[in-house]
Length: 302
Image 1 (cartoon, one colour):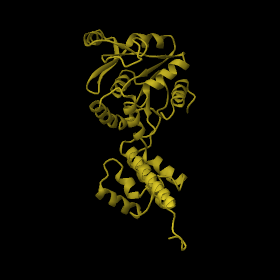
Image 2 (spheres, one colour):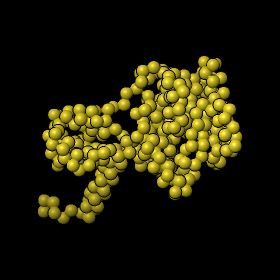
Image 3 (cartoon, one colour):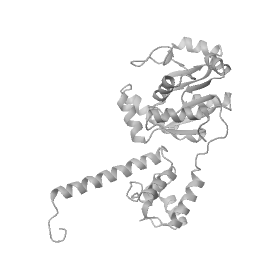
């Protein structure tokens, strides 16, 4: 009853749907926190910016429990230390509580800091299905001045992939020969199955010509490049959300269920390593992400 009248069934249904959408939104944010797709400071910023957002309606207890290595006991100690009631929602925190929470978050989860200086050797990495190849292809098509390195791999071509354009498809014997001959700048076994590597010759030649070189590789390879050339600029590509990453992986239909599960487990490990990189770029839109990467290579981003 509302002021003596019966609430129409359609109103109750609409309210129920709104409540369900809100719960799903908060659940999605918690997955983003757990997998480190989104920094906790960003969730707090959203809560402050919009009092009606999913972030603002998240309970402080749920927020803390979604953070890595925070259990119930530690959660309660943190709330006591910050003088925050466990019934509070992020959007309902006072100015002093927000300041205390922000200081604690910055101490435990230091914000990402871009490294000073850039190199003409640009490395693009990120978790499976984040769209590294799509972003790199967009750069190749629209910025011919940037040399996109073509990797060698022992996996079979996917539909539409062309040898020498997307990858050099080689067998294990040829891959072993390239390693033995020192022809690879970096190489790694990815997802415990196939090997990938970057041929050194084309990279060295392009750098000698004064061109910017973009390597689209995995986390292991990025670490090897950093060791071989500490001046290399490393860019980590993030998905807009964990749910979107899962959607992209399943939607492309190139792996069976077992392989998808394996790749998602690996993705969690890769996402946890993002602070090893110099810059973070979110791939919500391919053209926008590609532009941000290109701007990093040309020094337009500060």
